Image 1 (tube, protein in one colour):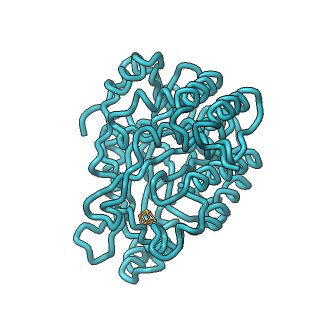
Image 2 (tube, helix red, strand yellow; image 1 turned 90 degrees about the vertical axis):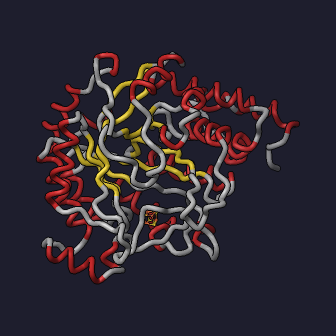
Image 3 (tube, helix red, strand yellow; image 1 turned 30 degrees about the vertical axis):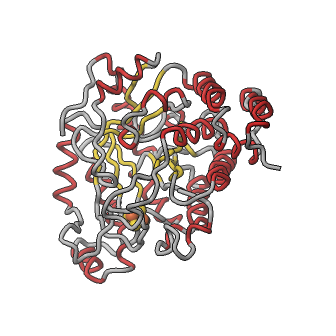
Length: 400
Ligand code: SF4
């Protein structure tokens, strides 16, 4: 029997003690906690307490440049404004010279992460793009991204690639030029691939294929970033199933360094333009449940530009990381949502009793693990780690 509803408040409040005692919440308990307003204060308190035990009073972010290598994509997720077809005047594929120029600019502004974020396998859909890749000397996007990462490394940045679904072989090659890789699991429900759902036209959003990539990344011992997309038509139980799947993968392979709780934002030009955005309390409860479901060593993150009025609430919900913030490039996936100023975010953290600090695109727990960090990258990571310093010691965002 479901646990939601006011009469089950006491049972739910009692369940909140389980993660702090080393026990797992059940699926029903986690789902009910997402659904129940009256237990929200206790939920947030429990999640914040669990965060404090492992992460202390420090909250982190990564100073990055967002390099959208190509915005061509073979998928058509109904919430996406990033993807374009080749004949769209706003379609692009960055040239090697552009990748180098932006990387140099980013490094000059103190960035340490090069986020390679791009569409999924456009070479399978567009002959003109295949021709462009051939001109550049490559057969696949993954090959070209490898080159882009080499360029960014040459400019002093640490690449982190999210190129959609990659094969085991592609990931193995990219590990040599990336300190971590990423793929949003989004949601494990195959229902969202059905007719009229957000992923109907997105073959690469098949949950089984994404779960396989996460598992293979674990087998390859690649520090990995994943997450869930909140508000795309999923049920609360499906949200919990997604968190459980990530938790189980991390328990099997120990490679999930961070989990992003990303809220859907409606935009006028998407098919989901009228779709309801998840409210602040819903997002906060999801962050808190993520903190309680996931093992404590997994960083829980929410993008600060997608909840600009709710930073203090998210801190109270147990978040310990804000993800990448750029002094140079916009969030190309949500271009209408500017990054917060690091000084303002730092002040918000301070007011809540936390210190904002910069981190690298690989979390400290993986840096001294030769199985997780390719030996060729070790020296660069060590050098940049020395540069990472508290905001209070002078790191500030500059205007784009
Ligand atoms: S969300 Fe990603 S996979 Fe989906 S259409 Fe946009 S770029 Fe492609």
